[in-house]
Length: 429
Figure 1 (cartoon, rainbow, N blue to C red):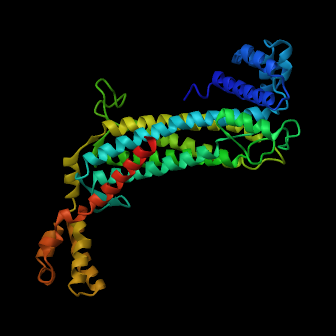
Figure 2 (figure 1 turned 180 degrees about the vertical axis):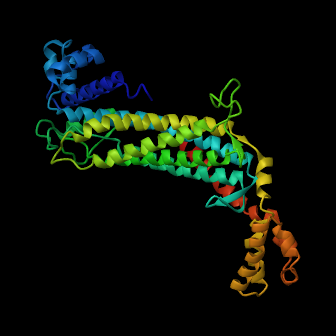
């Protein structure tokens, strides 16, 4: 990913676009084929140092690049950049960079997805308490929790794929998009050679809603990873201690407290997500430009796009590592599950009383009375209910207090997950 966004790679892509344009001009008969052949034989990407040296005089990076390439071309160099404006090269080359970088991000999402699916299957029957508002709700399984992450990663992948397709366009339409100095056929031929589609309409630039969509998709990937990492951080708290990050031999969790094993990678993921979401805002701000183009988007974009891709790529790598090595303490999960003395059976008891013919509000109040007492006095909810003859005489408490009932439909979710995995495998085959 770092190489894709390097100065060297950028200059290579600029030259690739220039040469594709020359080939197109030769095909339509404007530039002599012999000249293009000589240029292709001699043209080399200039060094970033040489372009920077010329830019100090030209104060224009693309013009400095063209001058640097032309230095070695002789008389044929006059055809380089023929009919083009700077953004023809910049935006088309940027589209190429985005496709390369997007492939790596999609690979990263695929790796994260595979890791989450593997751990979900491993823990499909590992009971844990579900929490809403941070408070114990009803039992679920750790595998079901992870299955939800996998589906979200699947949606993330789809969003990135769509955004990349929206960026699979180039433009060689000239100073204001009217082809005054070039020709639609040249644009079509050049874009085809580069693996892109000609933009159906452009000004001096490609419109930035495409770039904003891409940055939004990356921001959603980052937000998903933050959601997962935040859950790991919560579950790793000392009072909960249901999971732990991998902790290597020789690692130090704190400079002062030798006992510490902190969720530092999960915290790092959460922090970087803030950056990537910030870059999405930059993308939105870049959509509105003056007339056919100003340059206010350029400086911000040169930071936002590479950084967003680099951060997302790194986050995906670290998240995959985190999931692969995550220590899952199933015995602690079971202990936390029982910490409230069976309070999580309250809804099952409520439904059973309603089914027995009791008015819903009366049933709710009867269950709540025992639940609040168990909560306040640290008693076992099940024991209080069993001692209530009015309730015990109306419902089958053994059936109500059946722990397996909470996860009896888990197979439905995992069947859907396996279908998603099969679908992705078929697409990638």
